[in-house]
Amino acid sequence: MKISIKRKYRFLAAILLLLSLLAVVISNFTIEISARGKTFNDPAVIPKNKVGLVLGTSRMLVEGGVNPYYAHRINATIKLYKAGKIEYVLVSGDNGSIYYNEPTTIKKDLVKRGIPDDKIFLDYAGFRTLDSMVRAKFIFGLDSVTVISQQFHNERAIYLAEKKGLMAIGFNAKGISGKEGIKVQFREYFARVKVFIDLLLNTQPRFYGEKIEIK
Image 1 (spheres, rainbow, N blue to C red):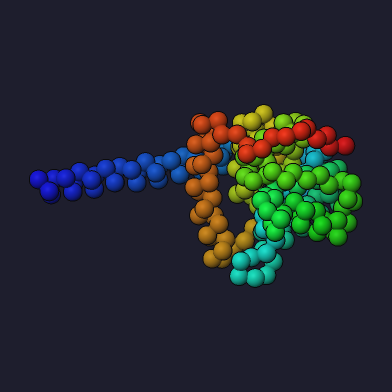
Image 2: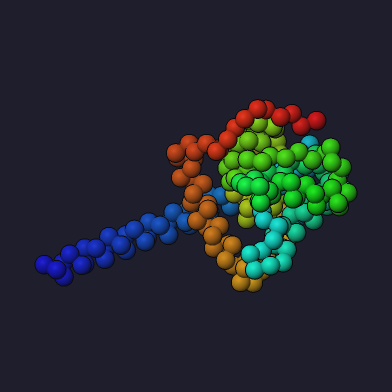
């Protein structure tokens, strides 16, 4: 009897594992296909948009030093702005405490690199990619946007944006290889599954607030 119960649990565990793997594969495939042809590496060929939306991340690594994902997003934003492919920058990120403020930190670095202060708008409630996309549409009144992040992140953002009625393309910041890059890419697979869970549950941003016009 005990052996039979053990076999039953092992069978159920195997089924759950198979379903989980299937969800990861389908989610990843769907988002990749949906974003095909909508992300760009060369500012010379990317279509022009009024606003570039930079997705926030921490400036510093826990172990010390500048986060390369952050540095590459700053470089990509500067490159896109100087190429005349965006007129304004919307920085969307986490502002969870007085000690952690992604939008303000990113803005300071963009201004240092030559983007005028009055061309940069801040979204302090971009706690998740979902929040950033929905708020770009409903708080900042955008119908189209150029998302600036690494390619894997851009693909997910584009899929979410279009499901929320925001037309989006992506400008790919340089990615990261090696151990750290593999770790982030692994997490991305599960983040893509979460996209479909959020859409199924109609998950809303943590905050909405008053509308802000970018002009």
